Length: 312
Ligand code: ADP
Image (cartoon, rainbow, N blue to C red; front, top):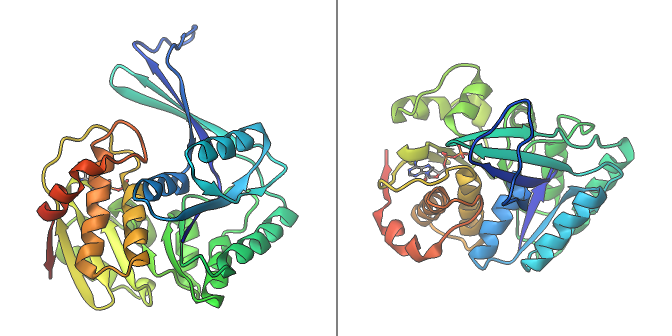
């Protein structure tokens, strides 16, 4: 079974409008409200793959209850830790081909909640059923910047692998710490942020960057490159993944879908080639759909065979 972690989930509200009128009333007819946050996108894709998955993280208030209810309705197991703060709303206004987003910051976590979640997390991690943990997204306010390192330390104690998809200071802190995730999946923007200079999609440059001391002891680094596929390092091996042209509908959440593919492939002990294929195919399948964290698996086999993997 796979454990997914979402520390700052949200109820994602989508307001489609023909025209967005500033400084006046906008009436919305078709509203959709879905559980959101990167970790929950990963969870939904894993569920569609028929992988056994349980979601954890922090939730609170009426919106937290709503998330639990909606996940259960979809048959998604979850074991969240309840906090006193309120889970946030994130609003996307879709208008005239644009997407205007209003993102709440979310609750501030207290010291005791921060400590108690680690105990809750340890109980889940040590369960025999859990084989791998996928941690995604940002940390809410109140948690120390090295919080993911503490979580990874717990996973290491029980010899469980971690796939980590976060960015900025939280990721940098993990890379500097002695407890390492098995996989990280930055895109080039996140990679540039990490090393403090612009990184292009050029494979030779990426190869050089990934040899940096900062990435030592991380078994897999998979840099997702959007329409250019991915560039990956697995121990001493380097791969360039080329993907076919696809009809992109909405690429939001493609990285999360890729993370689901990586986690699922490690869970089933897939070869390097199959892991990279699965990860990229799921990223593509998400980009081909309107919904975030949704994949139509009918096209899976066709795309799987079209992905090209070159060891370089
Ligand atoms: P993130 O959302 O983290 O920035 P990417 O945009 O790199 O992630 O997308 C993740 C994966 O999804 C890519 O590695 C690729 O396999 C697939 N993908 C995303 N956008 C496209 C696209 N326009 N064409 C083909 N594949 C895509």
